[in-house]
Length: 310
Image (tube, rainbow, N blue to C red):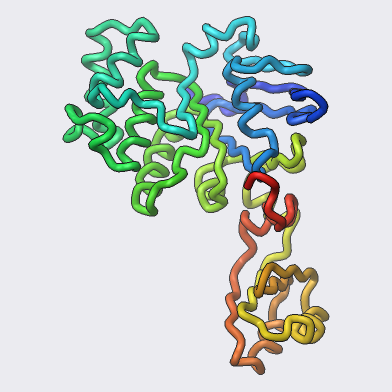
């Protein structure tokens, strides 16, 4: 029975510095049973460092991590037995077949051959890899390898999955299949912590989001709630403009907020009718009128400038 009030994992006041650089500064959040929590932020925001602290790979300088009624890192082994992890980079054993990758990983958790013989075919079916059971990772597509990594993370039947950018490098079809699998896990009562740079992925999959920037949590809430709190309802993008200053001077009075990036100007408004009317007299311009989305929120909160190392 899913209890959305139960916290499987809780972080309170996490801090971590490397020399003079404070990478994580007082971050707190929790993950409830049966929900997907997204963690988004620009490169260097502290996402990977937080994941490493959740896994006991780094000890926090301040704050605490608790999960399943135990403390990290003191009870790291107990906590890890209830976790499933899909790292950003492929860690499959290239010398083993799909089945062997799952068997070896299951042995790490002390699972018997009988349990594995029952569980592995179901995991391969879940990952749409039954036909590839005897093939090695090098013979699989990128999407298949990511699904095999997910199946491997489920071999111990974890309550909570930590997924670090699980669809990076996948084509749209493979991403959609991965999304479908993750959504089915949440419906079954699994909880997921998901880091991603894809805003459409976060908006589609996550019940709640936390936004990190420069080691601090700057926003938290359901995707639609955050969009409604921080953004105007409509966005009009105008592309390939030869005279931006003139256009912005003409249209800015009709917008609540204006941003520019390269040769594109973004006009934000709750009521775009005046903007659309003005643009109707400028048919030479390329425009896009759309609702505000999570990418707009991300860029408003963290800025449009590319960070060092991005």
